[in-house]
Length: 136
Image (cartoon, rainbow, N blue to C red; front, side, top):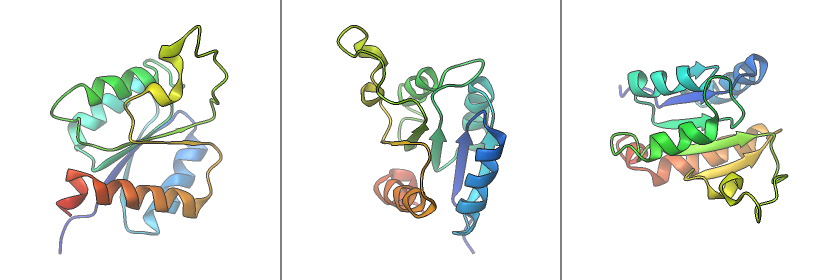
């Protein structure tokens, strides 16, 4: 029996994390969680997840910083990151292009709220296309 696919959910909304955990566990994913950016980075390094679901607005270290840090590290760069955020493209990207969500090195982006089947479809697609997913 092979080990379960591990997904790290990093979001400061405890209720949302619990809801995502329930949805993901219906497909037998193992879910690990973190509630701020610093804890998220620590868990990413300790747990070596197959995929990360990441909110952008986090305490202690913003999700965009965490995303860039993980994607910039060769040890973690191949882990797919799904940005799940309530932040729409509200910032004027002509004035602050670095704050445009699509400028992040994440593998997929979706706005909250997300439908359970859409979440599962995106997770499956990201895992299928990653080196991590190919080892499963």
